[in-house]
Length: 126
Image (cartoon, rainbow, N blue to C red; front, side, top):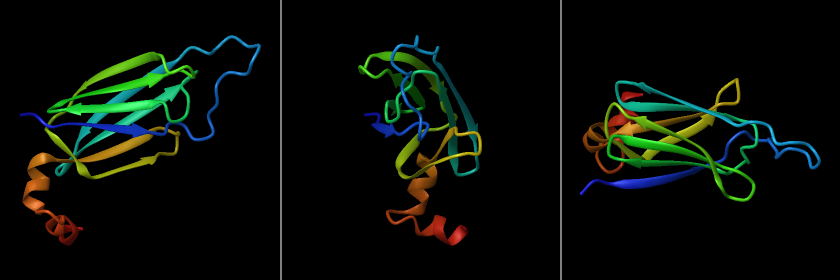
């Protein structure tokens, strides 16, 4: 059975919905995938009427979907992604880059299995 997990993310700190009385800005959602020796890195950039805390990333096997919602919770954009390897939630990290994009780093399933339950092999390799 394929493992499935969901990562709720806070996008664009300080971002807000369009001001009342103004037409909502168009929404752009871009996501890029890069392969690293031990993990998979996702870079997600959202703009327009994407609310903070309204971006979800869902993983199933080697597939991921980035989904953005508006202030009312309606899905406004989605971006399907194909991952270069299966990933695991444990050991993942997320941070913002200089341009305000969210960068998520996930361990590959094979790397996590070799690291053992505590990740000791990975910690020693750093």
